Amino acid sequence: GGGSYFFPGAFASFAPAVTPEEGFQFVNQTLYCHADADKAVLRGRVNLSLEATALYNYFGGFYTLGDPVLGGKLQVGAEAPVGYVHVKGDVATTGFGSFEESDRDLNLGDSLLAGSLFWEAGDFHFKVTELIFMPTGAYSKSSLANVGRNYWGFDTSFAFTWLSSKTGTEISLMPGILLNTENDDTDYKTGNEFHVDFMVNQFLSKTFALGAQGYYYDQLTDDSGDGALIDDFKGEAYGFGPALLWLPPFCGGKLTVIGKWLFDSHCEH
Image (cartoon, rainbow, N blue to C red):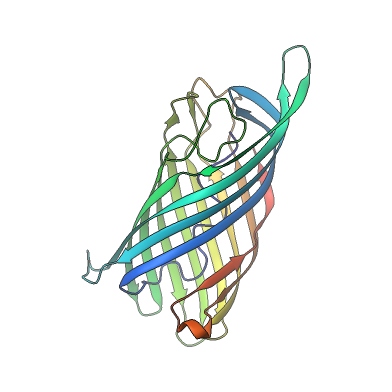
C-alpha cells in the first residue's frame, strides 16, 4: 500500500553498535512522517494522488545481560506504539473518473520484539539485530487509514560503528533486510525490503553531539498476491538531514535526548 514497517531514519541515530551498559533501558520515541504517493492499493481499490501523515509514539524497555553470549553482550526488549494516521486521496472508479476520500485512525499500533548481540574491539563496534514486527495493532480492511499493518515482518540488520576515543568522531552504517508476510485480510504481500541507515557524528563533549544522518531504501521484490492490483509496484528512496544528541547534566548521564529531521531527496514507486 505504499507503506512499510521501515520508518526512514528511525532504526539508528548515534553510536548504534556501541555496547550498552548492563541492566534496564527505557525508551520513548516519537516518529512523524508526511508523504505523498502517486498511487497505491488500499481497501482493495487503486487510490491516486495519496497524501498521508503518520505520528507514532513508541514506549519500550530493553535489558542488557551481564554475562557474555557468543563472546558479546546480549540485549533483548520490546516496544509498542500509539499511532495517528491521516490519509486522503482520489479513489479510481470505472467509467466515472475518481472521487476524493479521507480517513483518520488513532489507535494502538503494531508492537515489536528485539534481540541484539554486541561486540567491540577498541574503537570498532559491531551489532547484529533481529526485529520481529507483530500485527497487534488496530486494522480494518474497509478503512482507508490504519495504524496497524496486519502482517508480520522480520528485519535482520548488522551495524558497524567507528567511534574515535581521541577525537569523538563517529562513522556508522546499519544495513538490513526486512521480510514480510501476506496480509490475510487483503491477500496483499508487501515485497522484501533492503535498507541502510548511515551516520557521521561528532561528539563535541561527553554530553552533546551533532550529526549528519541519512538512509537508503530499496524494495527488492514487487508487491504480490491477489490483492496487488498494480503491476511492478515497489519503492526506492534515500534522504538525509541533521541530528543532535544531548545528555542533560542534571540527570547524571541516565537520560539521553535525541532529535533528528530527515527529508527525502529521492523517492519513487
